[in-house]
Amino acid sequence: PIPPPFRIHFPVQPILENTTGIQKTAVILVNFDNDRGEPVDAGQVRQIMFGQTGNSAFAYYQENSYNKTFFQGEVFGWFTIPGTQECRIDDWAVQADELAQSAGADIASYLRRVYVFPATSPCAWSGLAVVGGIPGQLSRSWIFRPDQVGIYLHELGHNLGVAHANFLNCNTPVSIAIPIPSGIQKDKTGAGG
Image (tube, rainbow, N blue to C red; front, side):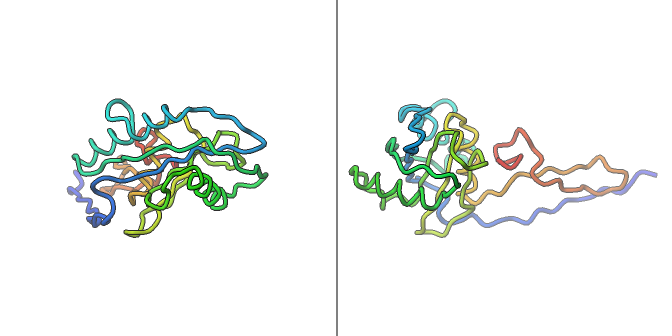
């Protein structure tokens, strides 16, 4: 017998208040006193984040939000902070903010901040981000593969409230679809970043 049709219901998630419109973002380039590498320059990162054509966060989110979300801002740095043997992202963010502020950036006016590091940092991830955000409060991402556009897109998605992508395996012997977490390698939010 042919199994009955099935329906998959996904709950509609509300749009977070601070995820549409211009996303004013500071990108701070940071290296360490024991690794002063600068694997990308400010112009490359500016194109990755704010370029209005090509493969950029601006273009990706503009298209995928149907012209509702745009990343705009400035790139600051390179700034050098003390190297550590531990992954201390919160400490590094505070130090980077202080250095950018002392160099003349009005860092407090940016509620979205992206910290870009050389791939040789002691952190095990390609990137990391705060998921979601509370309107009026700080939203941060840390990028450890500074030349990989997909890492920026993935982490910025988390800042906008997007969780890791899933897919449904509907090729099962019964009429159910089984959700498989973080399994879409080609999706910007799949595969765990």
